[in-house]
Amino acid sequence: MFQSFEVTARPEQGPPRLAALRGVMAREGLDGFLIPRADAHQGEYVAPRDERLAWLTGFTGSAGFCAVLTDVAGVFVDGRYRTQVKAQVATEFTPVPWPEISLSTWLNEQLPDGGKIGFDPWLHAASQITSAQKDLADSSIQLVRCENLVDRVWEDQPAPPMNPVKSHPIEFAGETADSKISRLAEGLREAGCSAAVITLPDSIMWLLNIRGSDIGYNPVAHGFAILHADGRIDLFMAKEKLTVNLGNQVSLYEPESFLDAVAALEGKVQVDLGILPQAVADVLSGRMVDGGDPCALPKACKNQAEIAGSAEAHLRDAVAVVETLCWLDAQAPGTLTETRVVTRLEENRRKDNALQDISFDTIAGTGPNGAIMHYRVTEETDSILEDGHILVLDSGGQYLDGTTDITRTIAIGDVGDEEKACFTRVLKGMINMSMLRWPVGLAGRDIEGVARAPLWAAGQDFNHGVGHGVGAYLSVHEGPQRLSKTSHVPLQPGMILSNEPGYYREGAFGIRIENLVVVQEAPALPGGDDERAMLNWRTLTSVPIDRRLIVVEMLTSAERDWLNNYHRDVTEKIRPRLGDDAQLWLDAATAPI
Image (cartoon, rainbow, N blue to C red):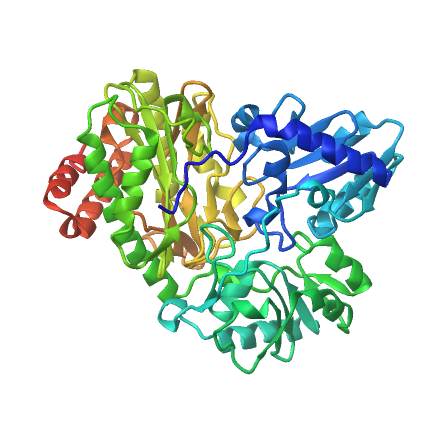
């Protein structure tokens, strides 16, 4: 199994670790210390060595941070994790709703007479520190750079990952590394920059057409890179990881020499202050140009080979999911547990030799567990799929030709009318986003409300984005493209995103429906403006949506037509790939409504 159901953090472990950390703080003369969920590369996912937030607090979410003071420890989490954090941290930790309450606001309330707050400059982006210092300028609170104090008290901290790197074949990459390097270097020259600093592992993987396994479920290797405007690459990565030929443009150095190499750069250096570690910003001084990660946008706009590979990966992945749903429907309510569903789905995915890993821990939340947006089932929380439950099943695979991510909400037995009405509103939002056409130049924030409108009309909403970017056999969460209230990056052809509205009622049930979609140029319509270029979506996911949960009368005729057409396409694409039982199940699951 790729997935483990082991309990990785317990609330009772937090208090003694917190006490040990406070002892070190006192010896260092600090009034507080900040613990983010981040590593030196500033990506979303971290290796076991860098799970400092989870180790200290017990909170295992993918975003958040802790501010430990001498008499209070605030765990800052966004709307996705408000339910989860309550179950995972001891009473010695205080959940703080973030970003509604900012770090600076909270510190001012807790330390009215001021104090010194330590932070590891490798684990905080330069923009975060600049913003916090600005907000604290009128107070007596100081942010102080220091070594990582958690590492001082984490006695059995895992070693840094040292897994081998492999080449990513050109038939999947669609462009040589030399070509990518050349066109990005040209962009630096046009911007008047001598170099760019790259810290995100997935950017380095994409640029050099390599893949790794330093982070669970993400095919990336840890390292740093400097892209020079003359087309040279300095790669800072442990040499024992590399057995592949990276070409004449790439020079390999040990990671320990990275800061010195950055300090020696001359001229203007392009960086992304939103992800650049403060430690790197410190040595660049006034030479930084905040032009973003040069790989981010090219990586997001998939080429034809990457789109074709992703489309094929989704078809094979759909077979695994449909075979699982067929098996699930044949089991009587009350006879299965969440872990059994996860195990069966992984067994079906493993039948594909192109599968390298799952793309994240499968979320299989039945009944009240479905209301925990990022629920991870463990041996202790494993629950029975009871009659009347709805099951949120969110999963994905890492295939050589693409990354998948799909959520289906499934009826278990006889489901109540309220759950069905909420499901139908979520479905309407997902369909309306799927049908959308929009003018070129709009960003995710400009259109994401389309998927929320049916819920808004009923006084409901959900506390996560409508969609995130997805890589091509890379990170399942990829920027800069997002369907989010805060996303200002214009959507462009080739970007792959999720379309996943949801609804969650704490202690009762959860709902989420997710397809992956790719941005494409929309064909002209009769009577449309000739000069107005438009975009729309092509849906990649091919798995039925549970008709048993739909209140058909709530759908418009256009929504009903979309669903029937989608189900017809699903049948045409994957029925020939299924076993006999799954073919019969699919026929029933995709019957017109």
